[in-house]
Image 1 (cartoon, rainbow, N blue to C red):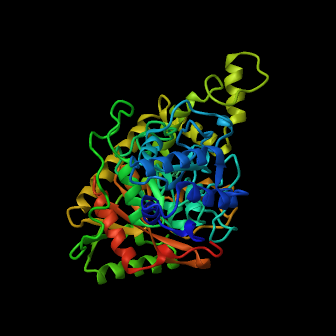
Image 2: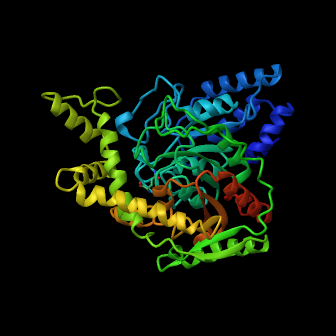
Amino acid sequence: MSDLHNLSVKALANLLQTKEVSAVEVATRFLARMGGNPHNAFLDIDSEVTLAQARASDAKLTDGTAGPLEGVPVAHKDVFVTQDFATTAGSKILSGYRSPFDATVVQRLRTAGMVTLGKLNCDEFAMGSANENSAYGPVQNPWDTARVPGGSSGGSAAAVAAGLAPAATGTDTGGSIRQPASFCGITGIKPTYGRASRFGLIAYASSLDQAGPMARSAEDCALLLSAMCGADLDRDSTSLDMPSEDFSASLNNSIEGLRIGIPKEFFGEGLHADVRAAVDGALREYEKLGAKLVSISLPRTELSIPVYYIIAPAEASSNLSRFDGVKFGHRAKDYTDLVDMYKKTRAEGFGNEVKRRIMTGAYVLSHGYYDAYYLQAQKIRRMIADDFQNAFKECDVIAGPVAPSVAWKFGENAGDPVADYLADIFTLPASLAGLPGMSVPAGFGAGNMPVGLQLIGNYFKEAQLLNAAHRLQQATDFHLQKPAGV
Ligand code: GLN
């Protein structure tokens, strides 16, 4: 079977359960494709660990104790801690770090039977929109290696698009699942805040961080999401006391009469014409499927940029204080006293973007500025969430672009962090509100680069989002297109 790497998670799971292929064969195929680390997508690969897991899966498939995804490979964004692979969060400060435990999400996917292929490159501590902030070098977009894959889950998106893994985990604080999925032509979903445990997810901005799956199709994302979600009350204080769901159960439901809200603020000046055309095309498909488009307003969309870039750095400045050379990873070699050791370790260990955010965060939280920045931002955050609840009175799901443009070329935004921040405009609102959101391939734009359609649902409506995405994928084949040579 020469095209194993192009099979869906669902197809691989079926072949494994019926023993038409073994987990070792599947793992071997993907490990071979990962050789030489194409696109710089991986940060840690250990074929012995992967093959040992695959052998254990084969034993379970034989003795009847197999999980639903037994033997299907998955790769993890390097912000999830893992016992068997190094974890760096894309930072030099954690170079060579190995966790004594697995993140809950990693553990749950193992329990479902998934075999770990390795750890995926990402922006340092998940701060970025292009994967250009990784201390271990950028990731190339498999559709055009001169372009960025998006970020911060750039390695995850590139690995799936390039057929190096059938699925990957990602995290989304302000768009980091949806935007790279859009840039690399794959499907990704960020569930409602609190659905997936943050235990063992290296914290960036704790009130926003959420884990989710990235794969080729909504059908595959549903399989992974069901395995990933669920209460983890003892280990994550923001985990929801809610069982996971069978997100595959309603994929084929009719979407006749579904009201799709189109926020006018998502279709303004900044939106590139090629992206707009692809998004419009997907919306026309929805109309053919019987959905109704309704015009809505999310009036504070623009404010989501300053609000997010106050709240996220504020939380990051606190979360990242634990990287001080005492407990984890890197420690400076020559220092005079403890404070000097902290300073040198952090100066050497963190990259520029991380330092920029720590400084911004410390500033907005400082005495005298807290009320003017942080408190104001929290108030507007609440209003942004209220705007969504108003909108959901008129519609069931919201649709629009994921990003204003297709993936840009390396260096295009270099030296201009604000350009990257502005490009987050359409993903930040749902993040600030804690709502589920996803990216679904919707066509191609400039340079024949993929364009994603963003779908945003109300709280706990992941099943409805996946249903809407799956119906679109039954009617279109954008998610089945592959970069040349894959
Ligand atoms: N681009 C945003 C940032 O840099 C979002 C990142 C993310 O979701 N992790 O913060």
